[in-house]
Length: 461
Length: 114
Image (cartoon, rainbow over all chains, first blue to last red; front, side, top):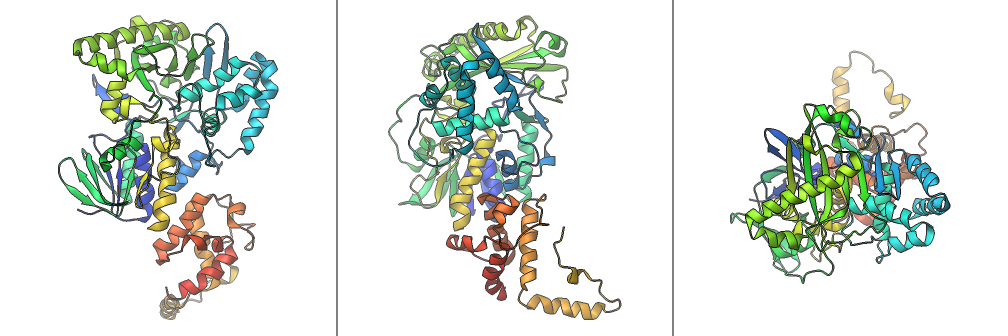
């Protein structure tokens, strides 16, 4: 079998890359090792109910006419009309540092600014200066790592505000411990605070269907259950892939979205393990009957919290770091139709190593999962009110679960701390897109797929 | 929106279907006129962005600034030209497609053989 271009990985960056390629090139082939598309943003069924994995909220909300906005650029590049989707905006979100301060924000940037004016009046001038700096700063210019934490620290008087601003940006997209690159900060600040959260109407399954149908309509092919065992290459030129089934598929170009280390592995080059930890996460879902809606917040979509001023974003020593986390209430997007059930989700940082050790003994692992979920519930109830007694279904994904279903090494959803911004991994016709290229979030990862195709494949095809 | 100039929009005289047909087929063999090239470019842009506003477009000013296009949109113009007219435009020539008039100047000789 032969294809013009092979895209490895059917997550959102792979789907976007394949759509972009298929618009102009025939015989594009997308290979996904699992039987379902979506990668980190997928779904599963329990008790005849569809549960989403990954997706809390999509960042980068933009109104229709804003041509330069990443969301609209992405839709143009993929030739997907906005009317294809029914976008639902967040109601509002909040950053809460317990007993210290709380800041609400929404898709109207003014809300955050006025909250800062009220709570941190001494830092407002610094915050405004930061905003005007970001207006002119180009985060896409390549450059060395610049600490966002110290940059903010020099401009904003209240250290607490610095940590509160960093908290959501870290939880929604940093692969680096306790700090982030200034460019990454600028991108995430824009994505989360300036633009804000939304989600597509329906479920992630519907969203994935729209993308896969579009790809197929453009002449692309999707093969699920097709795991690449080896990339066939001679020197710095690739000529195809060998699936684990033994089948060989020849091609002219390959775009890999499975991570830089993971790609090196199937090329047969074993890179030394990178410095710094990969950050693991644990997520729990609590499903509730619609009758207890009144007991929970109706106007908060996502809450980012820390139990103390001293917010740490790092791999914990224990299984889970309960001192901070994210609470997502997906029923609180605008115009969501709530059926018989709704759910609350919690996310915390977690240690892949610890969970791996525990996994040696399956019953201990299951016991640990239950204990951690109960603990997480008690933690988030402090922020949203108690609801535990009404839970009808609950489930937990550990870093091991995430690693198993997404093949993200160590279950690190944001990939390696080292990013390869230009997607160039030293081959003439093999490039990297997706998480380890460095754009994060759903819009970011999709734009990553598109931009690497634009940069490296389309002009040379 | 003025995509076509007024002269081309004049109604054709009735009863000349056959002559028209010959004229059209002949037209296909003829190299594209500069107006046709302009229309082609505008049609491609409209396909990229259905909200594009051509009313006040200055043919000597960069398309990108006037229509709020970015480099990603610009690549679409190049790729559509390749798809529709099998034109391979090397990257170093992209600047020559900056304005509507420079597009015509650059594409006219290339579309002669198309």
